[in-house]
Image 1 (cartoon, helix red, strand yellow):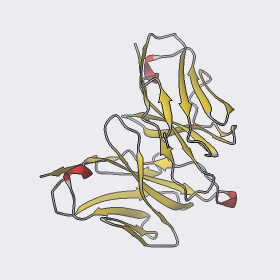
Image 2: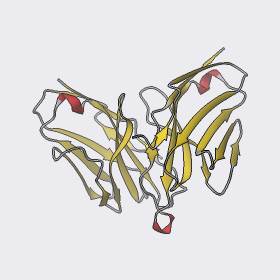
Image 3: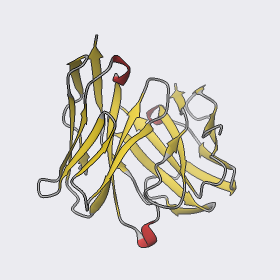
Length: 114
Length: 116
């Protein structure tokens, strides 16, 4: 099993540019989560999907952030326009439906906005 | 306002001794708790979990204790090994309908260093 795959691993961009982060969840998992990790706030949930449908996006910080899941094997998190305060590590995770099934995380994308 | 708090940013322990990592929570609706371990440049990986109907769960060298009245849980690692050196995150969730996945709230983590 390949695990959750995120790309790119590192992204450096200038303020104002559009950034797209990608995620391929584990096959057969019903849920997909996007988390952001910063020193100040730790790991915070941005949005999660169930069967490709967004369930809770209350953690998305601003309208500059958007996430899509066009099919069961792919999701994107887009930031447009990006700002320096968006610099963080963004994790994607997937899981089965049952709450006792743990989240499986990808290795993250480290985003730096200059 | 943090719902899940790990008040010790770091902990250093000698190899072979016990490591105790602590976690406090404020939301009485939380009824399922997990610990994740994270190595540098990797995503968190699941370690152990406990439901609120239990007060202890054990898996090999790892034991999680839950004190609901104090809203406190702890992770014990015994004996500690250098390979256990990592950041440990406590996480909690509240029951959603049908027992399905919901919002998992993480603490900020405790960095454990196990010295040979």
